[in-house]
Length: 547
Image: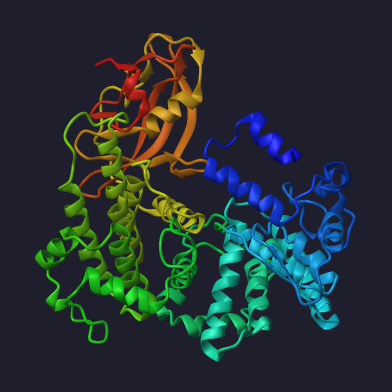
């Protein structure tokens, strides 16, 4: 009895007699032998780490090239035979087989394994290898310039580089039915080297390439003339560009959307199908928006066959002129307002808090028209309205937007610093040092708690407090100006922020906060008069609000 048969019977691995007999048949047919002692030491991938080509990619689950070499030698296959690896992994089998002169095929469900195996098993000319070294040198130098000047590395930078490379290759192929590697490399270089003068503190005139790109994007003169209005140092995005309406429009023309579905733009024919689903009566060539009144839009948005992401993409295309759509801010505004009404109509019943999944899903839907309206009003130069809707979107805590969009929102919110504010109309608790908001009984100073409570407040009449803490940076305006004391000898912190009401009036207010909290999770607090903690704030569940 063979060892394999003994193993089957000993462990009772297969109960089916038919399967048992079939395995024994395979054992006889293919002369299965036990060579554990001989091959055991060759299995581990670590033996590849100092072997040319095999060492290009460390693959934990792989095995050594030496093992494949010996298996091929022991198998007595001929030059006419083909080596097949159905689970190709990092391509070790292919590399070893090809090096011995055999044809080989590798199969794997993992696309990363396919890429690794193709790279390792392909043959390259001397010129191709030299060009690869040159390209790597270019990108390395660009990385060095980029990261020495960035405050922090964005999480999606590597994804952005890869997506940009794929996009450039795709566009190059469409134009010429061939890949223009030089054009692709120049695109990748531009990701890291654009506005190098901003990183290095030098002045540089606009290059011919920048002018050509500007003409290609067909930005109108109004966007070209827009400059940062603040006297302070301008915001710089992760690619070294000054953040403003012009650079964000350029970004949206190349990569339309919020970035939550990847950076890659859709092919135009695919977008046209989406446009036809969202606006069946619309003709892109004649821009017949007269056939798309508010009732038509409401019914269309409310019907089946389209997603919220489809509607969002169409609206963005009218804001920026993506996919050869006519740029029409008024139509985009109207569509966004109708979408807001449609989403509002789906407000769920029950308790509105973070324990209600239906409510949280509804907030995710509401966030989209909020962000779209903020974008529309940014380009209509109605910055108070834009800030109002942007902040509403952010405060849903249910919107996913990429870093360029976050940068742009932060840039628009900063414009409030240069807009005249109305005299504050707010009085009572929180607006008077004798009646501060904040903790009732705490004795441990915790400024972060004070700031988070202010950030989570909303007006009972629709006012928006213009501050939101992101994962990394602050959105909006919140400054701890100073501390004072009242007649009760309480130490009170004074915070400055903005409030925008439903009529889009902008107020600069001082909030007086007792920042001394307990060490426990629960807390008894007072909220500013006319305000409350927003429904999706987790503090609602364990804070006691004292009137």
